Image 1: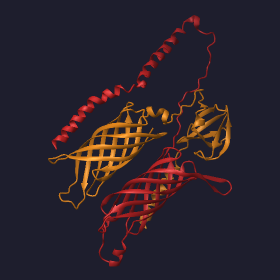
Image 2 (image 1 turned 30 degrees about the vertical axis):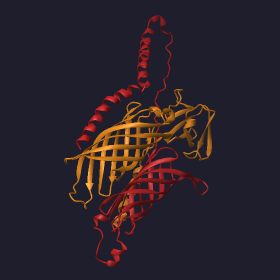
Image 3 (image 1 turned 90 degrees about the horizontal axis):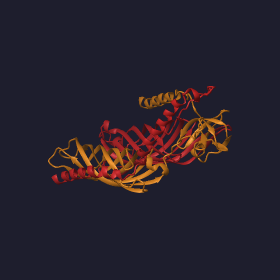
Image 4 (image 1 turned 45 degrees about the vertical axis):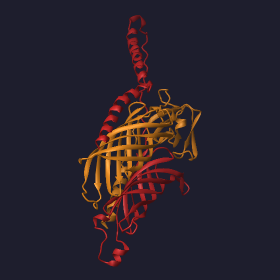
Length: 240
Length: 249
């Protein structure tokens, strides 16, 4: 295996020599533009004292009221943080309450990326209930936590009308993502997907209703099988 | 009962915190230079136009959400205006409002990039998140955090590397990457000689970056990893990041 070590070393040396060379071909216009602005500023600075000679001084000093120049600092609210609470059906292990947090970044009016972390606790299987004694899992192993990184699409944006005078913005969205589920003492690669509906009572607050399916492989009960854990939750989030 | 109360308390506290947000102090005022701008009821192209503000009037920018700006007129009407119309407005100084949008025209001047990738790490599934900063058109530094989920072991790695995009102006551009980091491996208990370990990892790799539209990119990458174990032999792991979604800003 010494060979692979040498190969890596060789590639590092190769890269160290090649990379700075390649960067030269970049033709970076940005760095060249910067110094030219400096002499321009200098010449403007030297022009001011020349006006100070008595002959050139204007008879009336103009009282110009300068408006304060401020670069527009616009409050950008593309992030959304929130919490949710609902029910998850853990296959073979009953349905249980689930709660979690959610952070989303809106890339455009159509797409967003989202990270969710949720927690639940598995119940007893039918077998455990019927057999009475034998427990398949320890209490700690029944903790169910998951995370998911998803891409969302606001498929049906719209408005919801409540009565005659109120209209709230809403969106029906689809999400799909990847992540991991920790259950029965093991982490498992999980694919998740689903849909959700969000209503915005104000411009910065959103109420969500979501349905997700978490799919992963598990070999807990002898042979490997795919499980689908469906989850439905209600959540609140704020834009910031 | 307590199990129900805890998340509820979190929600209430969260709601209270959000409600306590201070209102905006001084808002940016702009002058309308187009014949008129249209205010939509929501930040999206489908929301109806319900108000129009004509040239020469001043409006305040309340906030921005993606490519939409919420503005407030001098009569207190609030609505959403798309970026395309906001370009034709002026700051009080008379300059056009400077609104940078990460799009194809400034794809080349992108600096920050982030994304998610899914793939295969020596037979195990992996989920990774990455963020990068470009210090020239070609060269960027990238941090990748990976969660490895396998049948025989789980693990996580954090790597820092250089990425060199050969022809950044191409829509589909190949790149070369080289870096190092640490990897934590946690073999599943059923294996003999199972023990947790943290090792250094080094990699060389390459991939293709495909510019999709606006600020989105797709990526696919291969890495040849060398895990510098404390055993006699180093471990070589092929890593295929099948598909990644990236965006820049």
